[in-house]
Image (cartoon, rainbow, N blue to C red; front, top):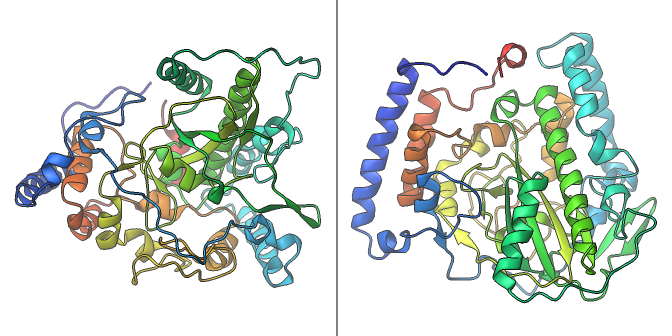
Length: 438
């Protein structure tokens, strides 16, 4: 392991000065806003070991985190851009463009596209996308809805006498199997796909009888690898995270089956992960459309297990993400595809058929994202995750910054500019990642 540096670098000093000033301003500002300081006291998000800042900044949400109009309908997975190339001629060029770009970048030996980068990427998602498993395919391989042991015989259901203790033990298992954080919620069928796309046809999404709970897990991605976005090193870390998701949801599902209950393990299939993670108290939705976790920011992947096993639901949380994103806009200004909305705030209108109308949020234009972000780089881009101010490593400087963001989210634009001055979010050299000592 690399020896820890002694003292502060110039950048760390400047950053610490700026963030401390921001925190001081935040505390002064919130003192003048009735109810804000009081609402943010206490710790409601302590399922895993977290910094003092995370524990102090998170508040239990008191209102429904989702606002839906009568236009809302369950989303048909057929319209997801992972599925559309299988039936929609208008988007097939995206995959072709991506393959051509990847070959060209590899041929040039561009940074992040060398032989070892390609090798790293090739092995990253094996568990999630081989062995019959599909990241976006329900009831496949490791995410099968039936026991993985062919000789499995269902035992009588374990009588759960202490729901709180039982839930704590299930969460402990999820963390032990590989999750970075875990929350539970009652299953809202609004988030379950109406249909899924398999082969060349649409199939209704019918869950097993009695399934009405969800165990949702967050999996942290390595910050240094994500910082190389949009290269293959970054994409490899996405694949590694999904492999962890596949293994963990399979393990947890099998554990649940061993006490007589039904378990449906899931990655990006079966149901929408972000709103379920919000319901399970794992974070808030950000401008870039994905979940912002209070500790890991957007630098996570999500998995879940749906079950009929009783579980104690967690409360949704808030820590100022919406207000912060209203002012920051760094993901939108740096998005190479211009797919993240700059103005207009939340809306229930979808820009393309690959987003579901009827729910208030920031709707990303996924067609632009794929065509002008993913495809030109031959990867899954991920620039928005890399540049987000919530994407910070642990440490007192960044903890202070997180605390400031939660206390005074209206300072979003100021924090984003400070990030720019301190060069946070700038693309890291993937060759330097290879040289880094562990």
